[in-house]
Structure formats: C-alpha cells, structure tokens
Length: 236
Image (tube, rainbow, N blue to C red; front, side, top):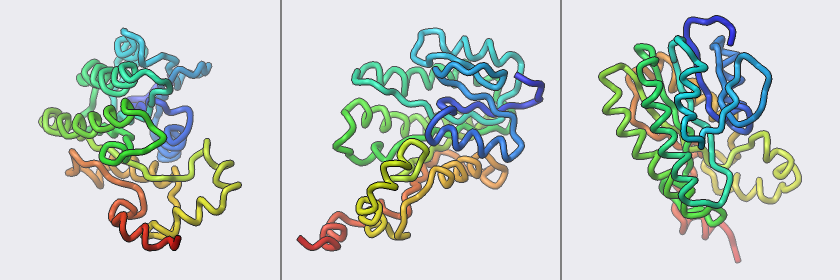
C-alpha cells in the first residue's frame, strides 16, 4: 500500500455496488484499501476470505499503523448455508470492527451496505439472508451508541432495486420490468449504484458529522407506498 496518513477501507470493494463506492472515494481524493477474496496484485488491495477464522487479524496486520478514516462494509455471502451466512455477515463483521476499533481516527465513520430484507421479505432470498440483514440493522444502532463516545459514527444504507454493474445487461433487455418498477416508485425511475455511493460518501463526510445510528433507504420512496396502492395501479 502506498504511503498515506489515513485510509478508507471497503470490504467487498472490487465488484458490484462496492466497486462503485470504491471509485467514488478515489475520485474524492481518498486513499482506498479494498478487501475481498479476489486475487489482485495491488498495494491497494488485501486478498483475504472474510469467512476465515483469523481474517480480522490478517487484515489488521496488513494495514499496519495506518489510521482508519472510514470503514465501508459491502461484502456479502454467496452460498446456501444459513450458519455460514450469519457467521460471515454478522460475526465476522463484529470481529473486524472490534479488531480495528483502536485504529479509527477521531472522528471516523462506519457504513454498512445492508438490504431492505432487514424489514421486508424477498421471495428469491433464503431465511439466512433475511436474518443476517436484520441483525446488521440492529448492530448499526448498537455500534452507534457504544462507539459514539470515541467519535466513531455508524450508519447503514439499504438500497432498493438499482442499476449496478452486474445487472445492467438484464435490465437493458427487460424494459417491461424497468417500467413496472419505475411506475410504482414515487420518483418514477430506478436508482443507480452511483446514488448509493453518493449516499455513503455523504455519511462519511463532515456534512453528516452529527448523524449516527440511522439506516437510510435508497429506493426512491417505494417503501412509503402501500401494497394496496401498488395492486390498484395494475389492472388484472
């Protein structure tokens, strides 16, 4: 890693929304260190499997004495095991924050990229996915209270259906789906990963210096619309 006084760490920062967040921080002049299983020959990346027992210690050792300005948690589990999902998303997240907490600057910020599954049920996602996102939502509030005295803020973002690198091809070929989502969304359009990144950047900025313990829904207001209103908007 090249020399810099402070760093921003983005777990899962090499793909999907995480990669967009990484680029946003870099464009904003931040020194960014990505963490993922992806093998990348770069001083700005740590290749580590967060599910491994000593992953948090491994990451801390590779960071060295750098001060942490921001920690953005974008990693996600890709598998079928409920226990593994809970372990990676909840236990390993806690392990990482506890291992790194003394390297956080004053002030600093933690942002969890969560999911609307913390409060809604998605038919295409298993029970472990929902339970882990609900636990992360609670964890954000716990950390906000307990790390607040050390000037470490903790918030989360919960993206709705947004354009991101891995689904661009699907939505470009399915205009009907895009129109349906847009029609039921108050802002009448789908969001983009860049808008999620912009919100994360805001939460890590001095403009949000008195904001902690919140979960921001980035869905164009869709969570405000009743199921009955959505049903009535479509004639059978």
